[in-house]
Amino acid sequence: MDEFASMAHEAWSEVLRPMLADREGGALFIGTPQGFNHFYDLYTSTQNRPDWAAFQFSTEEGGNVSAEELQAAEREMDERSFRQEFQATFENLGVGRAYWAFERQANVQTLEFLRGQPVFWSLDFNVNPMCAVVGQIMHDGTVHVLDEIVLEDSNTPAACEAFLERVQQWRLDAPQPLWLYGDATGDNRHSSASRTDWQIVQDFLRSHAWQFRVSQYVPRENPSVKDRTNCVNSSFRNQLGQHRLLIDPRCRELIRDLEQVGWKTDAHGNASTELDKSDRRRTHVSDALGYMIASQFPMRSSIGFRSERLL
Image (tube, rainbow, N blue to C red):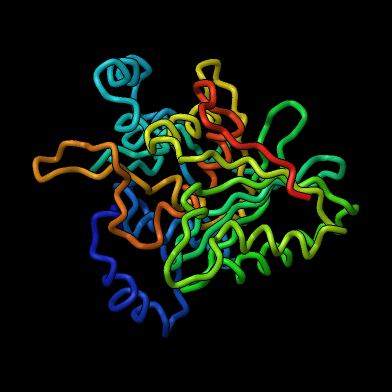
């Protein structure tokens, strides 16, 4: 099926797939990435389907375009357009991609919990979904995101229980050093609640004082969205080409965020300094990651920063 990316997604499920059923036939999908459409969804879904396989080839590997032409294209095209058209990567070209430095090949790899290293827990207090990331910061400053928490129509107590479930599988040596990060607005008191989000988290951790030695690193106010995304991009790939932020492939929603979250545009197509939140599932788990990165690896010295030992 040549150029499946440009076909309507119903063509496969409603027409072609039924035609193959009687003879148990196979299909070959060939296409050029065109953003994060149904072709992207099909490509990434093969990772969990043992009877499917996915392959990705660059124009250079194809051998049909001269090196001189590729060099000319590099001079004339922007970085993301070149990657899509000549290197077969999925790019969000419609609007500016917020986490442009993230690359699956460089930043996603299977990670293991390492004893003797602190665990971090960073939260975004959205309700639907409620999100957090859990991982470790290595001695060399490399960040390993080991797991994500994404809970539909949930609350902070449920996020606490989900966190405990995640880390107990690692059989921690008590007391485990735990570094706490997250959304500064979680300290705001709401009329509908007797405790703030951070008070709920702190009370939960105090009830497990034997298990964790907690330090909280939460600014009095959140950094600007632009500063936060710049910190994350710098961790994914800095000017020297170093990759200091690694994501375990089990963090599927986080990876989708990093590939798909873009900047909001106005009626004239001009990018703003706000993230596009038109998809309710997007931005929240990457926000959780960004709060930790911006606190631990700020691009400027911290002002009004609150660091305290809780337990």
